[in-house]
Length: 372
Image (cartoon, rainbow, N blue to C red; front, top):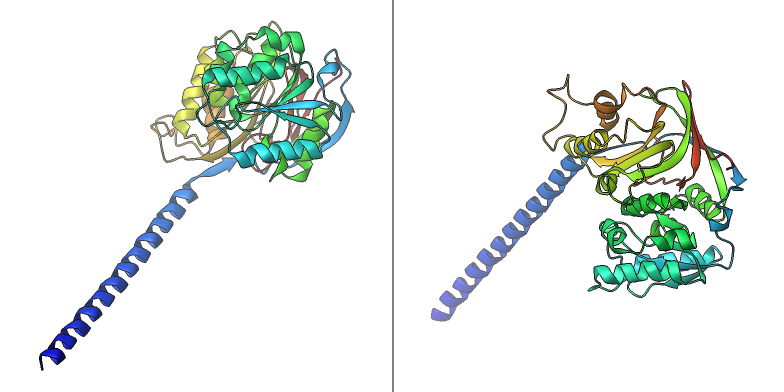
């Protein structure tokens, strides 16, 4: 009888435990589903602009200007470094293997993937890449943040003395600004992604630009465009990073010649974009531009931040709407919206620090680099 009683209790307890476990699993599944649903709702808020702009590469023209010697040739040694955030080993390897496929000899810097690397280590890699006479170009593995710190401590005279192009975008915007101030061209283009998931037409344009074959782009226009034609040195890149170089010794907006300003950004809300644009406006950067090209704005969240336009004549419909209404509509220069270059799926390369011609018509705009 006692054995039967104990057995009955055991069965009852086991059943209770099983029910509890099933209930816990159900609750966990509910929680996971709810979390996924919340994430889906949050993702639906995000939007991107500039990524779907129809673009046509009208052709390529071999660069014949004074800086023709800066471009690469098959068999050249190319330094692989990361002056910004720490890359993964996979990103570094993708860059190295990709450069080999493009016909170059990649040489990895000493501290590219060193987890405990210091600012001096990053500076050392960059100065090595510039000083080594066998190295002909510098290919960055990734962006992230902190290249502006390296620009502060490096020997910037090396850029002018060696005239080697640097390739990258996003946080590498600080490098582009430094190179432009030094009078040396650089290339705003994909980094490790150029060899992994970049569309073939973008990768091909980047491959050609490294060797001095410069494209002419024609893009479909938008309702915000301002028609006109302008020429100037192409400067800019990531909007947020541009605010870190303003009024520094490597500020590319302090040129003694006209410039065309290119801007793009990622994961910013209206408040952040407005803040950065206000810095450029109050520093005279917008007023002194001969023309402006707006690129991609990726994963913008219109529901966050304190500045959504509801006290400025109605909520902003998009980043372009805000840029137009708050900063650009009164500028008497050609302005183009939607060049597919930046953090989106398509990232067409741009030759920075060289004269570019911007032509904006009623339905389209073109970017071309005339011979210098």
